[in-house]
Image (tube, one colour):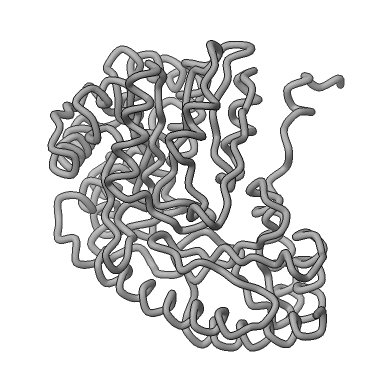
Amino acid sequence: MKLAARVEQVTPSLTLAISAKAKAMKAEGIDVLNFSVGEPDFDTPKHIVAAAKEALDEGKTRYGPAAGEQKLRQLIAKSLSQQTSLSYQAENIIVTNGGKQSLYNLMMATIEAGDEVIIPAPYWVSYPEMVKLAEGNPVIVPTYGDTGYKITPELLRQSITSKTKLFILNSPSNPTGMVYSPDEIRALAKVIVEAGIYVVADEIYCKIIYDDAKHLSIAAAHPESYKYTFISSGFAKAYAMTGWRLGYLAGDTQVIKSLTRIQGHSTSNVCTFAQYGAIAALENSQECVEEMRLAFAKRREVMYEMLSNISGISCIKPDGAFYMYVNIGKLGITSVDFCNALLEDKQIAGVPGIAFGNDDHIRLSYATDLGTIETGMKRLEEFVRSHL
């Protein structure tokens, strides 16, 4: 069968490929230390699991509204209203199969052939591919360590053309872990409003930040930015619910209705009883989120300190999420070759930076236990030393 041309334009996910290879090696009994996984290593909190089990026992297993259970939409709207001091209602929310589907639905609803979408690099691997599937053109804007891998207002302004439809802003960032400061967000919001373009704020890691970093949604950063902003988020990272596939998008009610039509003809509603787990996540104490955040913070300190003592590589201490974005440029080796050799020689799985649009870096996740981090960084030091 001849496949559609759009499929040929899409690059397979390197993050999933590396993770699959590491798991296969582990299944063979090889002692692989996996730093490629972008998910918490914690179990989902028990009260969330219990709520889903209760929903199952109560027979909440039938079709539900395509946009999500009304109570969950109301709770998400309430949570966002508290975070942003803006007024979100249930009608502004669609519950999706993970944050990924919220972004995909938005692209399909808003992007037409030839529309441009501005994507700062490093970027999450799926952003450009979603734009391509929607027949848009990803406009990649490189950023570097001297600006904390953040797009500046000047760079954003220079990248806007008459074809620009959307700007993707990810803070805290995957893969860099950097968080835009409130002042930086306000400056970007000013450009967005002046240009009259839309922004999708991927805020999936907004509850995992450290030290003095502060999260400000671009929706709340300017008196008019709310009407130009879509917020994509979910429950996967903060509540250790990656397999539950629970995300959402918040924005203009008419656009949300359009997304609901698309979802109604693709996946329909998110798993009904899983949504009751999400309801429990929002209704109850957030202590579980804080406990996991504190554990990530400790791991961040250990990994960063050990990485900082390895000659030949470097990284900037992240403000959020659970990733280190490590500069390997001095070694004169591509990120794919580096990661393949690292996996074969030292049984360490990392993700090549080329997957994020930057070939002289790799991404390491510290969403794993301290023992694994300490052993892994020792192996990494041995590997780097042998390549200097």
